[in-house]
Image (cartoon, rainbow, N blue to C red; front, side):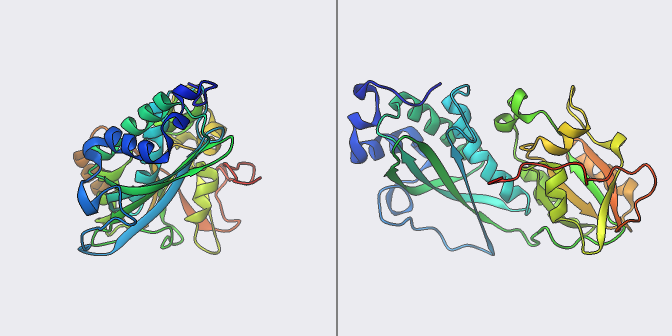
Length: 308
């Protein structure tokens, strides 16, 4: 659905900023708290955190992350879920969000309503309070940026920590996110991320947004390279190796396991906790130029590169 209209009566221009903010508050419903903890003041007042906080920010930009072929509800869901995936990648729990909306005066009200109602559904589903934001005019465009605040668990997993010999694992399946619609229909791996952060065998983790071929470089220890088993790559039906490595926006978790892990015990514990989510070991880190014969190497593959 095209978010723009030539009819001023159907657009945000028919309301203006103050009445639009009131409408957004209605559309969000119970996803936004009332009073000082919610929308309407210069700042939101958040409860004192019980431990370390996590903060992430991601946008959806019309023409880049979403387009007229997508329903507005898909765009709203994607905005919330791609930020939730970042919290999942560090084993955290999402708590509160603010949204900065930059839009042209010709944006359709019904498009924006469906966008915010879908965003609110995802917020309620994952226990996120939408506590504020901002609105600005953006001539000819539409961009919504969400900043998500989370709470870290007892252990925070980052991209650093892998060592030579460690196993490389991924959740779910990879490839074909855009033509299938999985780039917005995915489920953020929040329970899985928290579970993995509690396991001492897990050394590092991140979510897959730009494609495994690119993202895996952020986990690779100095002096090492990933040696992957091409046959082990978990692919969605109809996806080849390049799609699994390069398509991006899978929003699965890729993590590393200590070489000393009892793999049978780990796999059994995972299946008990998440019987419906596949977990696949796809290779391990080896010293540079020491990959075994037949190993899939990433020199000829790349993921999505911003600003290229």
